[in-house]
Length: 281
Ligand SMILES: Nc1ncnc2c1ncn2[C@@H]1O[C@H](COP(=O)(O)OP(=O)(O)OP(=O)(O)O)[C@@H](O)[C@H]1O
Ligand SMILES: [Mg+2]
Image 1 (cartoon, rainbow, N blue to C red):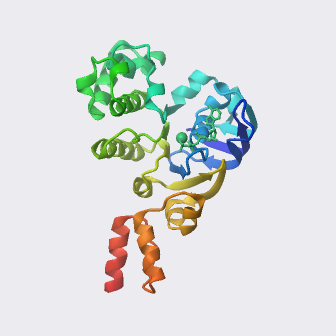
Image 2 (image 1 turned 180 degrees about the vertical axis):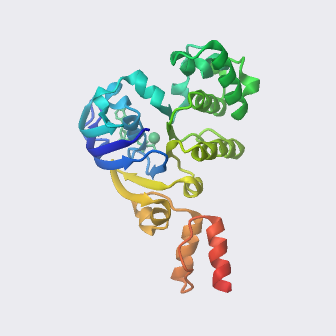
């Protein structure tokens, strides 16, 4: 299922003065795809930590308000059970790599092993997911000796292999080149088609525009904008919140400013092309 309700959640990390998240109220519905954007230090990763239950189970500090995961308060969830429900790809792949496995193969299979899958099933799934992430040639390598981009693929593989219903994915392409980014987004597209619940933090706004159902914009620990993707990403006020809007939307606003408005503000290149054609026609 994986329905997560946040009710007036305020969270402060230990030994810090001001909260990293303030008065967050939002419901994440199963099967939907959420994009989280906003300035550096805005609270995106902290929100991911909260959704995955690392707050309060791993991070201490002060948590106020309610975090309800599938009807049960996060405080009452068992952490192992949570990890079987919600996969989490960390922003920093260096911290995701366990450091205790000698090969990429073992690293990718570790989560499955912990979930109690048979050896046969582990081998099959690891082979499949390594092929998907194009890391089959790395399976015998030491995970600690990989490049940032390779680590990012391995970290992603180890989470996907667990086939959880919900995925929280924090900047999965930060270490990747354009080709690697495209690969990861193709996989995310497949996950969307499988109706997984997905929460994605990503700075590449054009990718967010193409994939997400809803957008949350965080600034200084607060949700400053949220709602359907088109409505949010066409709003120029996002720029004032230090968030980016797609090139296509900037173009749409420029046309309007020049007294040549399109019928709507586009957020993807395809939309922009269509609206321009319609305007000419
Ligand atoms: N482990 C921690 N302990 C104390 N403070 C933290 C910790 N992690 C983050 N913070 C603080 O919480 C606030 C939100 O940080 P967070 O990492 O959630 O932002 P972010 O939106 O993910 O930023 P970025 O775009 O740089 O990844 C920041 O002020 C940050 O300094
Ligand atoms: Mg972050």
